[in-house]
Image (cartoon, rainbow over all chains, first blue to last red; front, side, top):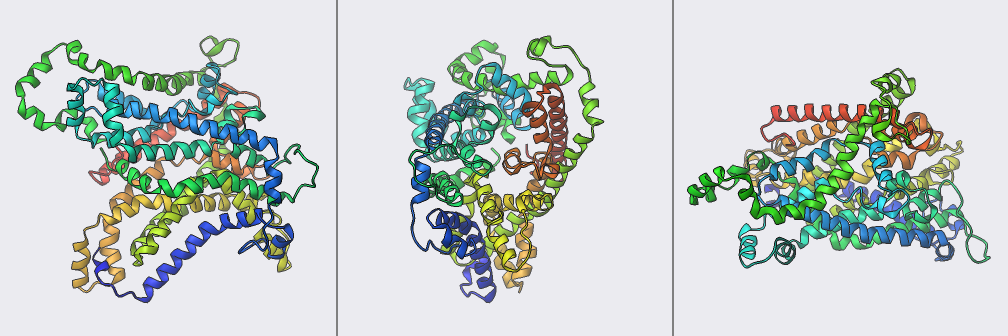
Length: 288
Length: 328
């Protein structure tokens, strides 16, 4: 933009900067505050009126306690399982659909595309979907958290648009060289599609890590709780037995520690994947 | 998705090269035209199966809205009920309460949640400290990736009995307020937390539109003596007019879909009179309580059909408004 060429910065620019930095603080501080609380003594927390600007002293009691809680270990196992396996299913299914629909001269392409897109605007809704999931025996299994959402039509379209941007001569020459369709997809298309694959892995992976609602709908078994379900439950009822005989630390710090253990993996991977997803979003925003 | 409607026109080069092939292929029987693509159709089979099982089978299952479904007789064997369920919920006071809750939450979300990311995008766009800009954007996307449960934990931390706000109130000598259990504050907290979570993420699309504005326009405006506000009013805002109208229509189109997950996370017995939306009502009468599958499906179907109608109307308006404006 032209205004960039004028390097002089006026008071208005400083005001904008301050407003934006304040907005950043409102985004970051609530998270940091919870992390500080998880590391603190409750007395320090109360003395500062609930607003710690830094942890006055470091205590690992809350982490020590919650990590000994068997329910947390189960929830971690479950969440990691559905994140790894669920994302793998998502990637395979979305890539297959997107690849086939990216081939422009395939007869029936429009019909298949419509078949997929209809689901963005209309569906059976909660109860009929529940009855189908129950009917095929997925209720109270981890598969109910992975299979019903195996493909997001929106991400499929995004991926298809990306594939369409790869010169079709590459695919055609691979086919002439005797590659099967599947080999062409794996050997030729995928190595060129890492940005979109990273975008898919991020969106689907975060979705699984944050899994809450499908557990509420489809699962009624303590063993299959995800981290989010466990964390939410800690705000309505006390957690069960914890190994060891020490006196439990204050509930506020336990909850805060669980928030940190739930959200930190996301906050840690996020900067690495960040450069891909905005790019990925934009591919999809352009009508293809 | 425009190419969908005109696949034959997408490849003019090929047609020019070999008009003969093209003409011949039109006359060739279906099988010989499709045969080279059989491996592709095979690759598509898992996707086809997925959509048939998890999307089209439930659409077929909607038929139970017109039946008295029970597990014993199954979807096909259960007796027909005609429009009984629809009559029942339309004459039921409960339904209109949740309908009103849904519309009100959506209205407040639209009123405050829609302009927020546009303002944020404009602020970021007008920011001239380039290095800090990237940092601010990175931070602003982060809450989008946090779960509603974590957002609830954050809200709880500030709003609970021992939270920051009540400490201030207590410090000033007032009575503590149970913010999360008070119907009077529910809508504010609901809309506020969704703005907190999505403001940066929703701004991406506007920022993309802003960066596409031709920089010559700004220079021309500057030469004409336009100050910052006039450049905003006459160059920047017209530059994002189309995308804003599309997003507004999309938002209007989704007016009946208040985030079910957010409602479930923030729900409790005290706030349920204002927090219960149509989706939650369907969940409660269908799955939580008496297993009124047919009645709940009827409510869900009613909602879906109205929502679809609104989307279609919104898209029709978008097209009227602007050639490029439609969603499809």
